[in-house]
Image 1 (cartoon, rainbow, N blue to C red):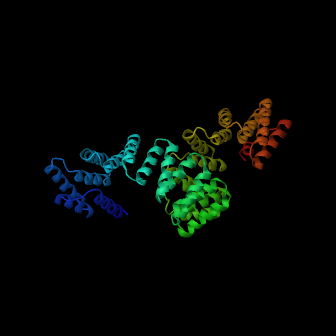
Image 2: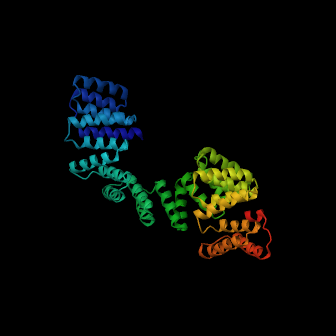
Image 3: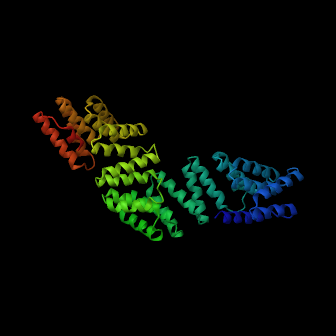
Length: 425
């Protein structure tokens, strides 16, 4: 791939320059032959002989430095080239490219706009890179304009992907799907496009189309890890843990260092009530990514189910430090503390959960249970009423939570205590 790109670069170089000097021919041949060290020595000698007055030498040296990742050196070479030939659009484009690689997006934008004015014909590379500049600067409308110009003039796969990504950031999934469908027709064997399309169908809850697209992807590339993970996650969501695990197992060979994959595998084992395996996988997820708050949250959840309340509290507390706006984390911290008989701090955790999410039925009912067990009937009734209102206004709530609410109501009438273990259920 690298050699192909280099060959194309060399070929375009011949179109830009009318190479006549013998020294330039020697430099060019060494560059094409990939003898870059000798090429640089020849360029150094040539620049000494011409007193830095050879634009071709600066151009080739700039290309070599860019390939070596020395972007600042590359920028300096192209700047020297531009100084020797200010009316050549190629110099402007190369300086703009260097600015873009250095993250100087505003400067790159100005240079590409200058190149656009200098071009005699529409240049799709200029349009695409202007789209990147505007995207990096957060000017999405202008970015879409230039990506649209790019795909109108050429079959540029990257432009389609970038355009779709902007629509996703704007939460315009319909247009994003439309763009990826068009791209998939032009590039039918590109599995990355089809996987992204499948993911968007998933987000739109168009599951039949999603499974159709992802299924076709796996027919072309049976071991595509992204497609396998997407299908596995959907199967896991529908409690198909064995099917999900089989796909995770196939995908994890390529993603053995992927924290998210191990987190999902761990939760599949949790769904199968294999808690030891779940904890092992979740700990690997945390080992691979220490700031994976979701894996830490899940570790706390599994330890709660296995009645290891101190461990649960430690993992949940770490998760809460990494993500302070996840209501369920504080609700589970409250459960762990309550089962450790630290009711004062458990109440604080429940209140924090409700503060983050006022219509949090689990936190409301567990706080009501705590108040019942402390004999605070008035407070308990207040939280039970809030719980009942939440049940009426929220999306479907688990039957176990609703049943727990009935038990609390009965407890308020009979003034009996509710076991902490019941609250955990």
